[in-house]
Amino acid sequence: MIDLPTSMRTVSPDDLVEWGVDADTVFATARANMIDFAVETVSLFDTEDGVLFLPDDDGDLYAGSLPLVDGWLAGLGNKAGAQPLFFVPGSFGVLAGVASSPERVCELVAAGREMGRLVPFTVPIDHPAWAAIRSAEAALSAPVHAAQYQSLHAEAEAGRLDEHAAELLHVRAADGIEETVAAWTDTVPTLLPRAHVVSMVDPTTASLFHVPWEVLDREVGLRAVPGLFPPRFLVEHHPDRATLARLRAAGRWGTG
Image (cartoon, rainbow, N blue to C red; front, side, top):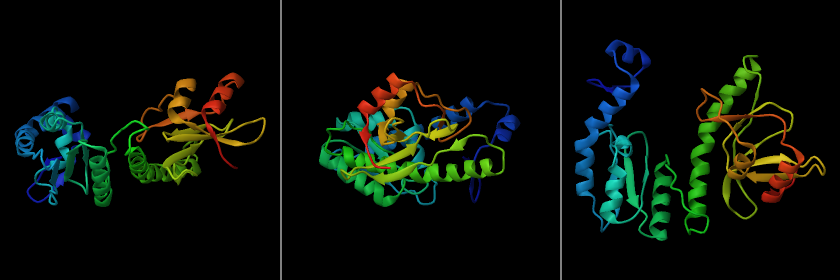
Protein backbone atom coordinates (compact mmCIF):
# COMPACT_ATOMS: atom_id res chain seq x y z
CA MET A 1 0.00 0.00 0.00
CA ILE A 2 1.04 3.61 -0.62
CA ASP A 3 0.30 6.09 2.19
CA LEU A 4 -1.37 9.20 0.78
CA PRO A 5 -2.38 12.25 2.88
CA THR A 6 -6.01 11.17 3.22
CA SER A 7 -6.10 7.62 1.89
CA MET A 8 -4.13 4.50 0.97
CA ARG A 9 -3.56 3.14 -2.52
CA THR A 10 -2.50 -0.32 -3.65
CA VAL A 11 0.85 -0.55 -5.42
CA SER A 12 0.35 -1.38 -9.11
CA PRO A 13 2.68 -2.76 -11.80
CA ASP A 14 2.79 0.76 -13.27
CA ASP A 15 4.29 2.02 -10.00
CA LEU A 16 7.10 -0.53 -10.25
CA VAL A 17 7.89 0.66 -13.75
CA GLU A 18 7.89 4.29 -12.64
CA TRP A 19 10.13 3.55 -9.65
CA GLY A 20 12.45 1.30 -11.63
CA VAL A 21 12.34 -1.54 -9.08
CA ASP A 22 10.97 -5.08 -8.98
CA ALA A 23 8.25 -6.52 -6.73
CA ASP A 24 10.75 -8.25 -4.42
CA THR A 25 12.37 -4.90 -3.65
CA VAL A 26 9.00 -3.32 -2.86
CA PHE A 27 8.00 -6.16 -0.52
CA ALA A 28 11.40 -6.12 1.20
CA THR A 29 11.11 -2.37 1.76
CA ALA A 30 7.57 -2.70 3.11
CA ARG A 31 8.64 -5.40 5.58
CA ALA A 32 11.63 -3.32 6.68
CA ASN A 33 9.30 -0.39 7.38
CA MET A 34 7.29 -2.64 9.73
CA ILE A 35 10.20 -4.06 11.75
CA ASP A 36 10.25 -1.50 14.59
CA PHE A 37 6.49 -1.82 15.11
CA ALA A 38 6.73 -5.61 15.00
CA VAL A 39 9.47 -5.66 17.65
CA GLU A 40 7.45 -3.29 19.82
CA THR A 41 4.31 -5.42 19.69
CA VAL A 42 6.25 -8.58 20.59
CA SER A 43 7.84 -6.82 23.56
CA LEU A 44 4.40 -5.67 24.76
CA PHE A 45 2.77 -9.08 24.29
CA ASP A 46 1.39 -10.24 27.65
CA THR A 47 2.06 -13.97 27.89
CA GLU A 48 -0.19 -14.25 30.93
CA ASP A 49 -3.20 -13.08 28.93
CA GLY A 50 -1.93 -14.77 25.75
CA VAL A 51 -3.88 -12.46 23.41
CA LEU A 52 -2.81 -9.43 21.37
CA PHE A 53 -5.57 -7.41 19.69
CA LEU A 54 -4.83 -4.35 17.54
CA PRO A 55 -8.09 -3.11 15.96
CA ASP A 56 -6.44 -0.43 13.75
CA ASP A 57 -9.79 0.77 12.37
CA ASP A 58 -8.26 3.61 10.32
CA GLY A 59 -5.37 1.50 9.01
CA ASP A 60 -2.65 3.90 10.16
CA LEU A 61 -0.73 1.14 11.98
CA TYR A 62 -0.88 -1.43 9.16
CA ALA A 63 -1.37 -3.96 11.95
CA GLY A 64 -2.89 -6.49 9.54
CA SER A 65 0.51 -6.70 7.82
CA LEU A 66 2.38 -7.78 10.96
CA PRO A 67 2.06 -11.53 10.20
CA LEU A 68 4.01 -10.87 6.97
CA VAL A 69 7.03 -9.52 8.87
CA ASP A 70 9.71 -12.19 9.17
CA GLY A 71 9.95 -13.45 12.74
CA TRP A 72 6.87 -11.70 14.14
CA LEU A 73 4.74 -14.81 14.65
CA ALA A 74 7.79 -16.79 15.79
CA GLY A 75 8.57 -14.02 18.29
CA LEU A 76 5.11 -14.27 19.85
CA GLY A 77 5.34 -18.05 19.97
CA ASN A 78 8.84 -18.11 21.44
CA LYS A 79 7.91 -15.59 24.11
CA ALA A 80 4.86 -17.59 25.17
CA GLY A 81 6.35 -21.03 24.57
CA ALA A 82 3.48 -22.15 22.35
CA GLN A 83 2.52 -22.18 18.67
CA PRO A 84 1.12 -18.83 17.47
CA LEU A 85 -2.03 -18.26 15.45
CA PHE A 86 -3.63 -15.09 14.13
CA PHE A 87 -6.82 -13.60 12.68
CA VAL A 88 -7.30 -10.50 10.52
CA PRO A 89 -10.66 -8.90 11.43
CA GLY A 90 -11.95 -6.18 9.16
CA SER A 91 -9.40 -4.76 6.74
CA PHE A 92 -6.45 -3.69 8.85
CA GLY A 93 -6.39 -4.97 12.44
CA VAL A 94 -4.99 -8.18 13.82
CA LEU A 95 -5.88 -10.58 16.62
CA ALA A 96 -3.01 -12.83 17.67
CA GLY A 97 -2.62 -15.48 20.31
CA VAL A 98 -0.92 -18.76 21.05
CA ALA A 99 -2.16 -22.34 21.24
CA SER A 100 -1.40 -22.67 24.93
CA SER A 101 -4.27 -25.16 25.31
CA PRO A 102 -7.05 -26.67 23.17
CA GLU A 103 -9.53 -24.51 25.08
CA ARG A 104 -7.60 -21.34 24.20
CA VAL A 105 -7.54 -22.33 20.51
CA CYS A 106 -11.33 -22.73 20.57
CA GLU A 107 -11.70 -19.34 22.28
CA LEU A 108 -9.50 -17.60 19.71
CA VAL A 109 -11.28 -19.23 16.78
CA ALA A 110 -14.65 -18.15 18.19
CA ALA A 111 -13.41 -14.59 18.74
CA GLY A 112 -11.91 -14.39 15.27
CA ARG A 113 -15.05 -15.73 13.64
CA GLU A 114 -17.18 -13.12 15.36
CA MET A 115 -14.88 -10.40 14.02
CA GLY A 116 -15.01 -11.63 10.43
CA ARG A 117 -12.01 -12.58 8.31
CA LEU A 118 -10.22 -15.74 9.42
CA VAL A 119 -6.70 -17.09 8.98
CA PRO A 120 -7.17 -20.81 9.73
CA PHE A 121 -4.79 -22.60 12.08
CA THR A 122 -3.98 -26.20 11.16
CA VAL A 123 -4.27 -28.90 13.82
CA PRO A 124 -4.39 -32.73 13.60
CA ILE A 125 -7.77 -34.44 13.32
CA ASP A 126 -7.62 -35.72 16.92
CA HIS A 127 -7.16 -32.19 18.31
CA PRO A 128 -10.20 -30.90 20.27
CA ALA A 129 -10.28 -27.76 18.10
CA TRP A 130 -10.09 -29.59 14.75
CA ALA A 131 -13.82 -29.27 14.01
CA ALA A 132 -13.82 -25.54 14.81
CA ILE A 133 -10.74 -25.00 12.62
CA ARG A 134 -12.30 -26.91 9.71
CA SER A 135 -15.46 -24.86 10.04
CA ALA A 136 -13.38 -21.66 9.95
CA GLU A 137 -11.59 -22.84 6.81
CA ALA A 138 -14.90 -23.49 5.10
CA ALA A 139 -16.31 -20.12 6.16
CA LEU A 140 -13.23 -18.36 4.81
CA SER A 141 -12.98 -20.25 1.51
CA ALA A 142 -16.61 -20.28 0.39
CA PRO A 143 -17.24 -16.55 -0.25
CA VAL A 144 -13.85 -16.04 -1.93
CA HIS A 145 -14.43 -18.94 -4.30
CA ALA A 146 -18.04 -17.88 -4.87
CA ALA A 147 -16.89 -14.54 -6.28
CA GLN A 148 -14.34 -16.29 -8.49
CA TYR A 149 -16.95 -18.82 -9.64
CA GLN A 150 -19.31 -16.05 -10.74
CA SER A 151 -16.53 -14.42 -12.75
CA LEU A 152 -15.46 -17.67 -14.43
CA HIS A 153 -19.08 -18.63 -15.11
CA ALA A 154 -19.63 -15.28 -16.84
CA GLU A 155 -16.50 -15.86 -18.92
CA ALA A 156 -17.82 -19.25 -20.00
CA GLU A 157 -21.26 -17.83 -20.83
CA ALA A 158 -19.60 -15.21 -23.02
CA GLY A 159 -17.62 -17.90 -24.86
CA ARG A 160 -14.26 -16.75 -23.51
CA LEU A 161 -13.66 -19.84 -21.37
CA ASP A 162 -13.88 -23.43 -22.60
CA GLU A 163 -13.70 -25.18 -19.23
CA HIS A 164 -16.49 -25.61 -16.70
CA ALA A 165 -15.86 -23.91 -13.35
CA ALA A 166 -16.89 -26.14 -10.45
CA GLU A 167 -18.64 -24.44 -7.55
CA LEU A 168 -17.22 -24.67 -4.03
CA LEU A 169 -19.95 -25.42 -1.50
CA HIS A 170 -19.84 -24.93 2.26
CA VAL A 171 -21.79 -27.85 3.72
CA ARG A 172 -22.43 -29.64 6.99
CA ALA A 173 -21.74 -33.36 6.76
CA ALA A 174 -23.96 -36.02 8.36
CA ASP A 175 -21.61 -36.16 11.35
CA GLY A 176 -22.03 -32.42 11.94
CA ILE A 177 -18.61 -31.44 10.62
CA GLU A 178 -18.57 -28.38 8.37
CA GLU A 179 -16.44 -28.60 5.22
CA THR A 180 -16.14 -27.55 1.60
CA VAL A 181 -16.98 -29.80 -1.34
CA ALA A 182 -16.58 -29.52 -5.12
CA ALA A 183 -17.76 -31.87 -7.86
CA TRP A 184 -15.60 -33.56 -10.50
CA THR A 185 -17.85 -34.76 -13.32
CA ASP A 186 -16.22 -37.38 -15.53
CA THR A 187 -15.35 -36.31 -19.12
CA VAL A 188 -16.16 -32.63 -18.46
CA PRO A 189 -13.09 -30.31 -18.59
CA THR A 190 -13.40 -28.66 -15.19
CA LEU A 191 -11.58 -25.98 -13.23
CA LEU A 192 -11.70 -27.60 -9.80
CA PRO A 193 -11.26 -25.42 -6.68
CA ARG A 194 -9.35 -26.85 -3.75
CA ALA A 195 -11.94 -28.30 -1.37
CA HIS A 196 -11.87 -30.42 1.76
CA VAL A 197 -13.50 -33.21 -0.27
CA VAL A 198 -14.23 -33.78 -3.96
CA SER A 199 -17.40 -35.60 -4.99
CA MET A 200 -17.14 -38.23 -7.72
CA VAL A 201 -19.53 -40.83 -9.12
CA ASP A 202 -18.80 -44.57 -9.16
CA PRO A 203 -19.42 -45.57 -12.81
CA THR A 204 -20.40 -49.12 -11.84
CA THR A 205 -23.12 -48.16 -9.35
CA ALA A 206 -23.82 -44.48 -10.17
CA SER A 207 -23.34 -43.81 -6.45
CA LEU A 208 -21.79 -40.58 -5.21
CA PHE A 209 -18.68 -40.75 -3.02
CA HIS A 210 -16.46 -38.08 -1.49
CA VAL A 211 -12.66 -38.15 -1.62
CA PRO A 212 -10.43 -36.08 0.71
CA TRP A 213 -8.42 -33.58 -1.30
CA GLU A 214 -5.10 -34.88 0.01
CA VAL A 215 -5.93 -38.41 -1.17
CA LEU A 216 -7.05 -37.21 -4.61
CA ASP A 217 -3.91 -35.12 -5.03
CA ARG A 218 -1.69 -38.04 -4.00
CA GLU A 219 -3.33 -40.43 -6.45
CA VAL A 220 -3.84 -38.09 -9.41
CA GLY A 221 -1.20 -35.38 -9.04
CA LEU A 222 -3.33 -32.25 -9.39
CA ARG A 223 -1.70 -29.24 -11.04
CA ALA A 224 -2.81 -25.64 -10.57
CA VAL A 225 -3.77 -23.60 -13.64
CA PRO A 226 -1.45 -20.57 -13.96
CA GLY A 227 -2.97 -17.16 -13.42
CA LEU A 228 -5.93 -18.13 -11.24
CA PHE A 229 -6.28 -17.10 -7.60
CA PRO A 230 -7.64 -18.75 -5.58
CA PRO A 231 -5.94 -21.62 -7.44
CA ARG A 232 -7.94 -24.04 -9.56
CA PHE A 233 -6.92 -27.38 -11.01
CA LEU A 234 -7.83 -28.61 -14.49
CA VAL A 235 -9.38 -32.09 -14.49
CA GLU A 236 -11.37 -34.00 -17.08
CA HIS A 237 -11.47 -37.80 -17.32
CA HIS A 238 -11.64 -39.80 -14.11
CA PRO A 239 -8.51 -41.88 -13.48
CA ASP A 240 -8.10 -45.55 -14.44
CA ARG A 241 -10.04 -48.32 -12.67
CA ALA A 242 -7.28 -49.24 -10.22
CA THR A 243 -6.81 -45.62 -9.12
CA LEU A 244 -10.56 -45.06 -8.92
CA ALA A 245 -10.88 -48.14 -6.72
CA ARG A 246 -8.30 -46.72 -4.30
CA LEU A 247 -10.15 -43.41 -4.25
CA ARG A 248 -13.45 -45.18 -3.48
CA ALA A 249 -11.79 -47.14 -0.69
CA ALA A 250 -10.35 -43.97 0.88
CA GLY A 251 -13.53 -41.95 0.44
CA ARG A 252 -16.91 -41.98 2.07
CA TRP A 253 -20.28 -42.58 0.48
CA GLY A 254 -23.17 -40.19 0.13
CA THR A 255 -26.41 -39.93 -1.77
CA GLY A 256 -27.10 -38.59 -5.21
